Length: 54
Image (cartoon, rainbow, N blue to C red; front, side, top):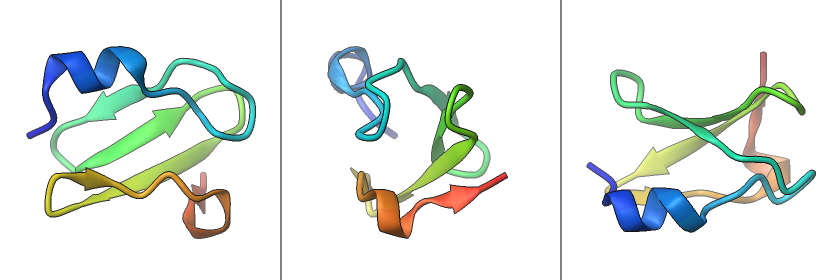
């Protein structure tokens, strides 16, 4: 589970928009870019090339 402090400062690396935290699937979601960033072992993988399109 990511801390609320970390969630407040994380933004999409592509467009710098706020991210939504999907706690069920452990993903950070950018509604603007339509990208999902995976969270592995409580570490957000904030690389655009590793993000999933939805």
